[in-house]
Length: 285
Ligand SMILES: NC(=O)c1ccc[n+]([C@@H]2O[C@H](COP(=O)([O-])OP(=O)(O)OC[C@H]3O[C@@H](n4cnc5c(N)ncnc54)[C@H](OP(=O)(O)O)[C@@H]3O)[C@@H](O)[C@H]2O)c1
Image (cartoon, rainbow, N blue to C red; front, side, top):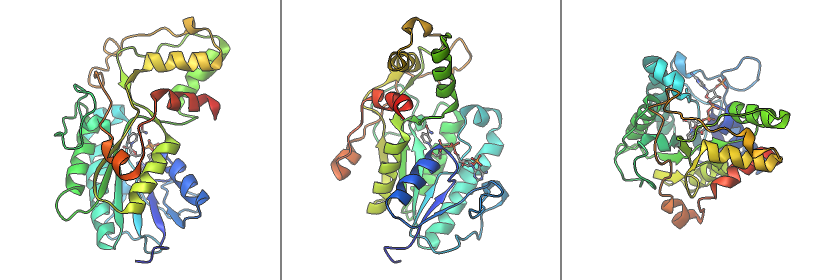
């Protein structure tokens, strides 16, 4: 297929989809971006309605499969329904697009690991502790099976301005109100812009297998919120850490979110950023 053939972005309205489309279009790439929202004018693709036989309007060289039910809570409450999208539909679409000549890239997550050890390696056996993590691990396993030829890019928590939780915290801090972030839930966050850059580079290189990208160390939500308060010039005493465990988030409480990112460093010269960078970007942008 020609090097100028378009790139397909499945699920362009989400957090990562918006960042990736913006980056690719700014770089002059020909992008086909699907949506399940009416009236957008974008090619329609709803994964819940069957994807067999679906073809992009023009043959694509690369396909980023970003459509997902990415809520931990929704996956926990509706494992069967979310599995149909996150595993069955995603894998069927990946196989169909592969047959059409696409190089398929699937963003995945550090939650394929249970977080008991820091800097989980790509080759460590997945040990998800959440239903969302189990679904992503299953989709990974199928796409990485011999003959699959896909790239799986495991990302740490992706942050971007406008995210509901962070937006509500920023607004509360600006009003001088207390916020209660978890002191026992960690993340290794990266900005959506950096995650999009990594997705582009992996796809451009057409290299299959597992890539991992996250911040250089863990931070708790409470530490991140404190950083946010300082960046906003708000009183740090407005940040009142609470326990996620006590709030019922037992599955999602883990000691670590970091992953070993050496493949990206060695093959693309991309190093894990400090976690503060992703938090600061929430305010700076
Ligand atoms: N955000 C993170 O921290 C993070 C970290 C690691 C990996 N990832 C992975 O990155 C990918 C994108 O995540 P995100 O954060 O951008 O998620 P998001 O903001 O929730 O966006 C998900 C997208 O999928 C679409 N979608 C959901 N169900 C669909 C269906 N049945 N058919 C078609 N489209 C559907 C949504 O459409 P609507 O907008 O119309 O609802 C939305 O555009 C996911 O695979 C996720 O697992 C995300």
